[in-house]
Image (cartoon, rainbow, N blue to C red; front, top):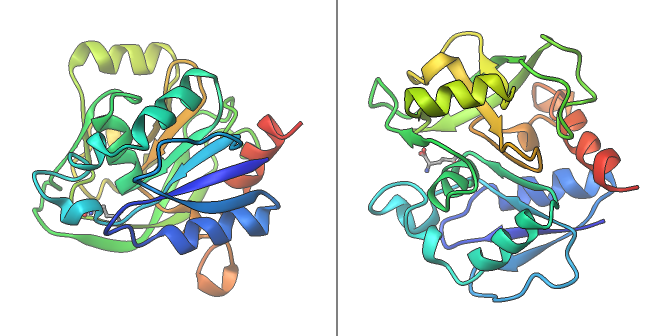
Length: 220
Ligand SMILES: NC(=O)CC[C@H](N)C(=O)O
């Protein structure tokens, strides 16, 4: 399976994302945001960072990048799309995931290891985790407060689209939401960084099973 790691000006987790994909056994390479084709790629990884300097608001300018139509095409074809942190913000901006990421309640950038709960392990992304398992991924964001309308929240809950929640809410996210999937289950966004939790030397290897899970779900 070949994955595109989309690079925007200001992406800064692209190397971590590529590395996570490669050590999981995925084929993966960087794809520039100005490209207009994702022909030959089986999935998309949108890394974290500060795309276009977070101008206007996080992810708002990436929304109109040339590559976005192709990300939409792959998503519509049911291929895996994972957006982490700024990648999650971009996925909400382009409408592939519901809701929005607002400024942290504290109005401070938070950067620390976070204890998270696997709220739904019956997705193509989380199936290698136990239900309600606690995992540790780092967080590093200024605009990670998940917000949506009551109607959308009901849909998320009814369809079990909430996959990851914070043990100690760091940003004011509704319902402690840290990560969600779309209704179809092939687009996933999360603020915490599984790609930085690939080695116990760096504090946690809990992110590994997310990438392995993607590969197992779509790789066969
Ligand atoms: N690590 C990230 O991707 C940060 C995302 C975004 N720039 C924020 O501060 O919220």
